[in-house]
Each structure stands twice: as structure tokens, then as C-alpha cells.
Image (cartoon, rainbow, N blue to C red; front, side, top):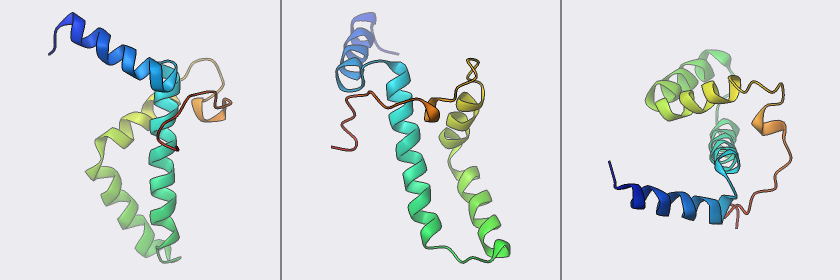
Length: 93
């Protein structure tokens, strides 16, 4: 674990690029969703082939599961993905 000064520096960098934690979370979630959309475009339409792929993919990426859990736990009734994107997002240029 880094020093408090190191954590503040990381936080300042994140805030510079994304605005705040929610916007950083939204950018990461959007990136992961787009990644999965690209994979889905190349899959067979047969559910018997798709389901095992998605199950193995989910098991291999616990961060994806955590992101989905955090999104599901949003208590304000409006999911992060439904909110307008005001982030200065560097992931998308």
C-alpha cells in the first residue's frame, strides 16, 4: 500500500482525466461493455455455443463481475450507465 501522498497523487490524476470516481467508474464500465460487444459480434448465434463462452469469460474476469455488482448496488434508482456522460474521458480520445 502506498503512502498517503501517493494516494492523493493518484486521486488527483484520476480527477484530472475523469472528473471524479463516478466518472472513472463509468469510463471503465463503458470500456468493458464495448470490449464484450466486440466479442459478441464474432460469436455464433447458437446459444449452446454462446453460453459456455460467456460463462468462461465471466469466471476469468472477476473485475467484470465486481463492476456489475457495483452497478447493481447503485442506490439512487439511476444506474451509472444511464447517466449522461460528462467525463473528460481519455479512453475514447
